Image 1 (spheres, rainbow, N blue to C red):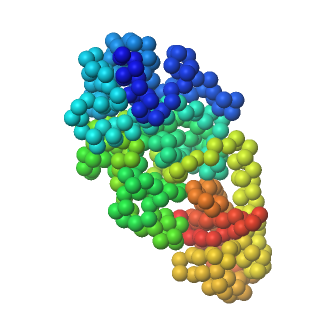
Image 2 (image 1 turned 90 degrees about the horizontal axis):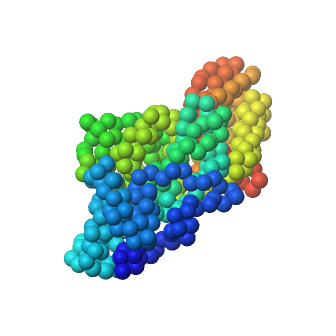
Image 3 (image 1 turned 90 degrees about the vertical axis):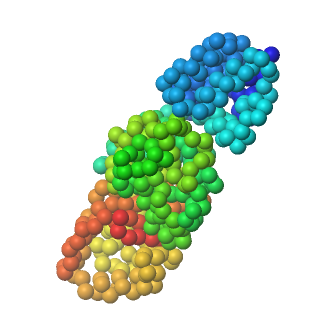
Length: 405
C-alpha cells in the first residue's frame, strides 16, 4: 500500500514519467548526441532517491533522504511536504502529493509544480559538447555567459573557450507568475531577449524578498524599446531567508535562484559584460553549426566595415534594412545623412575589436552584435562601443537597428 499510495502521488500525479532504468536503481543512459547527466544537485537528488526508496518499500531510507536535506536546508518547503507525506502514508493511503485532508490547495499546487519541474530537470540530459545556437561568439573579456530556459526552469552557465561557449553547470530557477514575453510594467512576465548584467546589489541594500543579492539586467534593451516594450526592474536575485526555493512561476518577472545558487554564480558575473540570454526554448546544436553562423555573421560585419572605409555610400547602405531605425532616424534619414557626411571625407579607417555575437530568442532570425569601434577619418576621430541588430533578409544579413552600447 505504501508503494502504490505515495509513489503514485509523487510521480504519476505530477505527470512525470520516471525512467524504468531509474526505478531499477540503474543510471539512465545518454543518447548518442549527449553525455551522461551531471551529478544532480541536492533537491533533484532528494526527489529521485526518495522515489527509489518508496518504489522499493524502503520507508526508513526515504525518510532518511528527506531528513538529510532538511538538516542542511531547514527552509526547504518541498522537502517538508515530502516528509509529511511519507509519515502520513504510514496510517492512510495518499492519492496525490500533499493529499492530506484540509491542506491549503494553492500552496500545495505550487509545491507540486516545483516537484514536477525538479524531476524533469533531473531527467533531462546535460548538453555535453552541444551548445545553444544563441551563443554565437563571446568576446575575449566575457569569461562566462548565462542562458535561461524558462520552459525548463533552468539557468545554464557556459564558459568562454576561445570565443566559443562550453557548458559548465546549471541551476533551478523561478520566473514570472504570468509567463514570458514581458510587454509592460506590472504584467508579472519575464522578458525574452539578449541582456547584460548592469550592476550588483548586496544583501544589505535589499529587502529580504531578494535574498543574498541581486544582479539587475538591462531590460528594456534597445530592441525592447523599439518594439514598444516597457517596464523595468528585472533582476537575477535570491530568495527570502525563510524560503529555500520558489515555485517555477512565482516572481514578478525576475529570474530567481536559491541563495546558495546565486552565491555560486556570483563569482562568474562580470558587471557590464556577462550576457544573460532569456529564452523559452533552447535549440541545442553541435559546435560546428555555431561555427558556421559565426563565420557567416563575421563575414557580413567585415564587409560592412570594408564598404564603410571605401567611401562608396551606396555600397555601404546595402548593408542596412529598409526597416532600419536608429534613435529618431529611419532608413531614409540615415541614408541622407551618410551621403552628406561622406561627401566631406577624403578617407576613412574603421577598426573593430572585442566582437560578441548572439542570436536573439524569438521567431525572427535576429542577431545582436556588439563591438568596440575605432573610427578615424580625414576630419573626425572617435571611439565608441556600438551595438547592432542584424536580421536575416532572405539569404543576407542586414542591419535593422544600431546605437551605442
